[in-house]
Amino acid sequence: MRKMQIIGEDMHIMNPLMYKAVRDRNEREIVHIAKRQLKAGAQSLDINLGQSRELGRLTPWLVETIQAEIAVPLFLSSHVLHQQRALEVHKGRPTINAVTASPEELTKAMEVVRFFDADLVVLLVSSTLTPVDVDGRLRLAVQVMENAEKIGLGLERIYLDPLLTMRPDPVVRELNGGLPDIDTVLESIQMIGELSAHQVKTIVGLSNSSVCLLPGQRSALHCRLLPMLYEAGLDAVIMNCRDSALLKIAENPLEMWQNAA
Image (cartoon, rainbow, N blue to C red):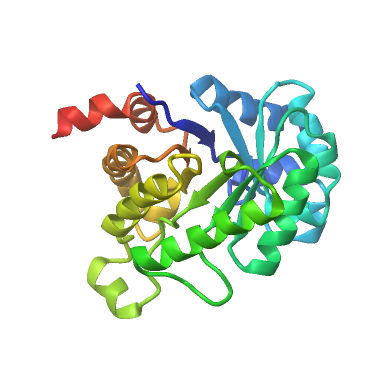
């Protein structure tokens, strides 16, 4: 059975425990947060210290702190394109996360990715297009693939993120309570697989789908969405690995999908 790559989301500066550990330079707590996610079932960890330059400078230290104790591949936020020390010290193949499909930014990112033998997550949004439909996402996906071919970067090194977020239109947001247009995302994932002959991988940040909900409601939505995303062809998910119900689905989504059908 096809397996999804599970990426732990806890090493984000928005996690109060992570913020405190980074602020205090508490290496023991940082390693604890990392190990807890891996023990739960994560195969990779997403590292995001936000947009602050001061915190961003700590990314190389954070990479070294984690990988000194654990052999785990890391997803590093896109600011490492400008602070490349984190890529230099990373053991194994890193992944640069959340680069937009804007042509200039994308070209620079792909050149860095090729140089460091990394992978790349591209958000299907650009400076000129914030797509709300399948066609818009596919246009950007094609542009990303064409750009990779020009740079000489293999499609298997790319993840495309169709953005599992609420739609920007305030009228639509009011009607659907801020929840994402899941049908559009599902079709986009399926079509990206077909367009790339399943060379390009697809990825979503699952928690982005539920930012409008109360904490007690978020898990239920995630548990309903993940089997549908898997059935559409999703390859990787950034998620809350402390949610045991969600993790059970992530590890065996096909069975959960069939039981729900």
